[in-house]
Amino acid sequence: MVDEALDDDQVSVELVARGVDVTSVRVDQFAEELHDRRRRFTEASALRLETEAKLAGRKKVEDDLAEVNRKLAALDDEEEKKKLTSAQAVLTDKAGILRYSSKADELATTLEQIVQPERPNLTTDAGAHFFAPLEQLAERASSAVADLVTEIRRVTGAARAGLDSETDEFAKTIAAAEAVKTAYEARLAELGVDLSQYGALGVEKVAFTDELATLDDLAKQQPKQVEDEAAAWAAINELFAQRRSARDSFTELVSSRTPGLRFSVDAHADHASWRQAIHTELGFRQGDHVDSLLSVAEWIWGASLDLDTRLARSQVWRDALLSNDYTPLSDAHLSSSFVSRLKQATETVRIGLATLSADDALDMRFLKEGNDPADERSWQTVTDGSPGQRSAAMLAFTLSYGDSPLVLDQPEDDLDSALVSELIVTQFRKARWKRQLIVVTHEANIPVNTDAEVVVVLENAEGQLRIMKREGEVTTGPIDNPEVRKSIQELLEGGVRAFVNRERRYDNELSKYRIDVGMLARRRSGDS
Image (cartoon, rainbow, N blue to C red; front, top):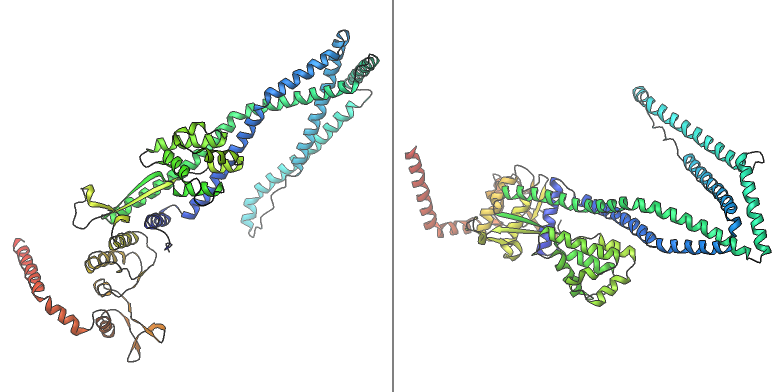
C-alpha cells in the first residue's frame, strides 16, 4: 500500500516503482544493489586517496634519505669507504634474504589456512559418481598445497641455517663483512665519532630505502586504482540507467494500454532526497544551510540542464569532496560557512557524500477530457489536477498493469458519475479478465455495469460489520440473485420507487437517446 503521508508527486513515483516491481526490477533489489555499489565505490575511493596521500610524502622521504647519506658520508673514511661499501652491500643482501624468507613463511602460513571444501551430503550413487572427479581434484589440490607448505618451510629454514653456518661460502662472506663493519666502527670510536649515531643512521637509511621501494610499488598500482574507482562510479550510473530503462518500458506499456496517461522520466532531476541526505550526514540542524544546499543542487541537477551537464557537474562536485578542495565550485555560490562544514567533515563522511546522486524525476500527465491528444496543452500534470482528476488518473494507472488480485476501497470517491461510468466501469471490465478485483463501493454503477460475478452486501449491526441476511439467508451472489439485486436497488439506488422516479424524470432524454440509437441501427442495416 502506498504511504498516505506521501504527496502526489511521491505517490506517482511510488506507483511507477511498484509497477516496475511487477514487470522487471524489484524496488528492494535496486536499493540493495545501489547500497552495494556505493560501498564498492567507497572502498575504491578510500584506497586511491590513501595511495595518493602516501605518494604525496615521497619528496620528504627522498629528502630524509639524502640527509642520512650526507651524514654517513661525513662519518666515512675515504680510504675505507670502498671496503665498507662492499661490506654493507653484503649485509644488505643478508637483510633482504631474511626479509624474503620471512615473507615466504607468511605465505606458507596463509596456505596452511586454506581449507578443503566440506564434502556435500550426497544421497544417491549417481550424485556420488558425478561428484568423484571434483572430490579427487580438491584432494589433489589440498595435497599439493600441503607439499608446497612443507617445501617452503624446508627451504626457508635451510636458508636461515645457511646464513649462520661456518662452512657456507655466503655465510663466510657475511662474517667477513660484519668483521669489516666492526673494525670500522672501532676505528670511528678511536676517532671519537658517535657510534650510536652511526648505527641509527644506517638503520634510517635502510628504512627510508625500503619506504621508497614501497612507494614505487604503490605508484605502479595507482593507475589501476584510478580505473577501479572510475569503474565503480560507472556501475552506479549504470544501475540508475537500467532502472530508468525498465521504467521507460513499463510506462510505455501503461500508456499503450491507457492512452489517456503519459509519462516522462528526467534523469537525476529530483534532488530533494539528495539534499536531505547531505543535510543529515553533515549533522545540520533543521533550517541550516538550506540556501547553499539548494544552490549547489540546482547548479548540479537543475531542471534546465541536460543529462551530460548534470553528470559532468556531479563529477566536479565529487572531485571537490574527495580532494576537500571546493574552489572549482565557485559557480555554485556556496556560503563560506557551508564550505567550512564540508572541510571539517571526515574523509569517510566526504566519500559517503560523493556516492550520492539525485534520483530520477517522474512526470505523470493525463489527457484532459474531450481534448486533442496531439496538442501538448491538452495534457495536464497529475499534481495540478483536481482531486477527481488525480483519482481517475491514479486508478487508471493502477488498473493498467499486473495480474495479481487487487483490492480497491471506494474508488468512486472524488469522482463524478460520468467518470465512474466512463473510466471505472470501462477499466474494470477490461481488468477483470486478467486479475481478480475486490471492490468496496457505494456506487451502483460499479457492481451493475461491470457485471460483478459476486456481490457481498454488508451492514453495520451493533457496531460490527457483517454480511446482510434476508429471510435468514446471507445476501451474496451475482446480480441475477433476486435478494442481491433488491439490496442494490434499496441501498445504492434508494429503492425501486426512487429509481423509477428518476427514470421518469429522464424519460425525455432517454426517449430521444433510444430514437437516435434506433435510427443509427436502421441506417447501418440499410448500408449492409
